[in-house]
Length: 229
Image (cartoon, rainbow, N blue to C red):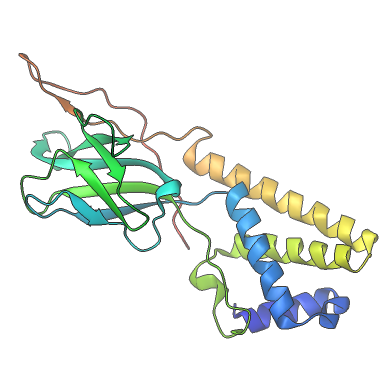
């Protein structure tokens, strides 16, 4: 749905919305997108490919350090059960920490480092992170909301935006009605997420522990991350 069509739908549902400019409504829409995203976080997995003897890498587009849930790095050994390279968990560390263990640390807002330094090309650094919500330009109504947001998000944002506009307009009856619709939509989205992901998702620990007797690390329940429709 184009933003222009979204705004037309808002006006059809609540004609008082036409008393405000598109720029105002898009600014409020961005606030609504942020609120929904914080309530129903969408998770994603993004990979970075290593270069031999290089420890510092750029954060991929869409990955913010504060939104990272966990990180792993592949080894050069394969899991005999799944025919894939093992992933070693990297704990989060500070640059001033004593880097003894497998870890990652933020260098600045654009880059991060991993330890130990990759010893070969083609290892996979796998970043599990929350998707950062998009923010739309108030002057551009030709962007497509569905490029970034699923249909159920757009529905929730519709209810939330009308609720906000009604409150600004001192129309408490409409505000209360659309707040109820919004809350019901959020409840449905949470239920769908828990059914798909489980209420307490966890990452997979497949670290291969080195000792006198080599053994595979314990495997925990695998997360199923939300994907964008």
